[in-house]
Image (cartoon, rainbow, N blue to C red; front, side, top):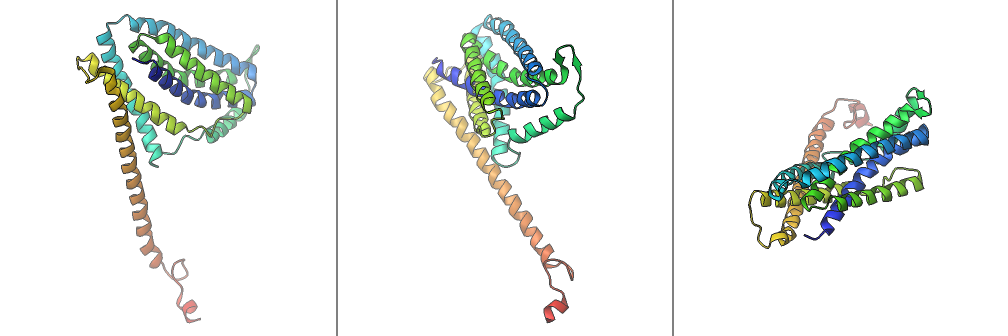
Length: 273
């Protein structure tokens, strides 16, 4: 199988999570101190690298059929979760991920937190950066390990993830602000489509299904998954619009029958004038 889907999917997924982690790191560094923030970030990256180093080779020891069955099921579930969030946000049922607002919340929390220092480490900044990078990074590690193990190329997946981190970190540190203009939901939608498609493809292969055209079946499976997701988005958006129209229609009679002196109806004295 061509390595390009592996590189692109892992890179984009890692970029999305790196943007979210960057918001937390900037809040910690700009409100507390950069040294402790970088220490927390480095500690989290060491933990994530250890997870990849241990779990990656372990997965590749499994028989390919069993590996693809397990990994396919996990990727499909994980991909559907990403798609669900992206669809709900795109259809208006859930607020878009606002990095600027999250940054302001994190800054406010950091400024109001008590200042605790042990030696050379500022523990609030260290902990905030560590938790942010670790939690966001675990999703990327999962994607990198499963994608890489399925193609027996965990190293390439890890390099793709590292490249995304470098790109996002460089951009964020250059502007000293969260990357609020990144089309995060669109990227989540694309990654969700890819994860779901490959999860279904590999899971079916692991269960003994032979796809027509082998790997070429993905050329049909990916667009079909995307069309289904776009269709759900359109249906939910239409339902949202219908609900808003119904709410406005219900509000009109209330205004029309409001009492004297209330908006929507003139009093008899005002009418006589």
